Length: 270
Image (cartoon, rainbow, N blue to C red; front, side, top):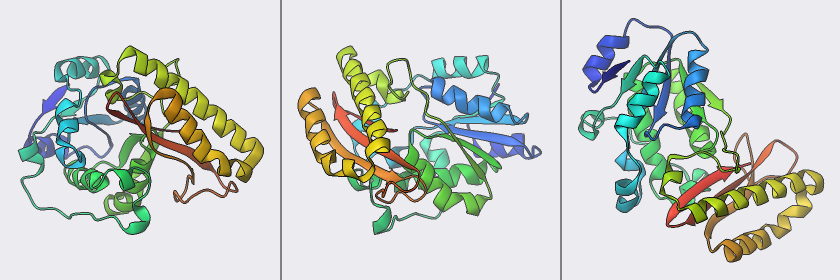
């Protein structure tokens, strides 16, 4: 595996390859990332993984500082997975040139965009830069960060003529969606997160049986979870998969949640 830190070296290394799969990450490589890498490798081309903890998508400095980092472990895992290229730029390298800045419209300021001011503008900004360097035709991202996936498809897929391949959320046996942030949780909070995920799966199942009748009790479910597990829920909403509008239960939909536990913010969808 070649480890590349500069844009110049990156361009020189991959310029002759037409089939390069790109897996963007912020490190903390886990089974969810592995599934994205394997999906790329199944295309029989080269795979490039990026590790860059992007400061502009953190709306709290403390959150950026405490985000789990272990580059040595990540490199070890990626080598075992036979990844061809690892791109690990520093902040100066990524932001040394001017690029388009993205502003979300009011209709897009829902779910995490409503509660994390500037977060998705930062995500779109860095992905715009990364995709400018890495001219891949295939981008691989997980469905756990579904709103992120939706916005990148909406704003960047046509610009770069890239296929955004969405891969299913990977969960551990205790129902929890794999996330680098899970490493910040205490054992007791991991247990709670598992129980919450199981409870939300049951709500999703009930929605398939009862449809719109369930909507009126969502606020009750929210209060019940907050009280039982001593958590703060930002949102608990059913939304349409295609456009993220509040759901009418006539098209494909998901149950979206974001909550804080142990001062760690977790998101998920079912």
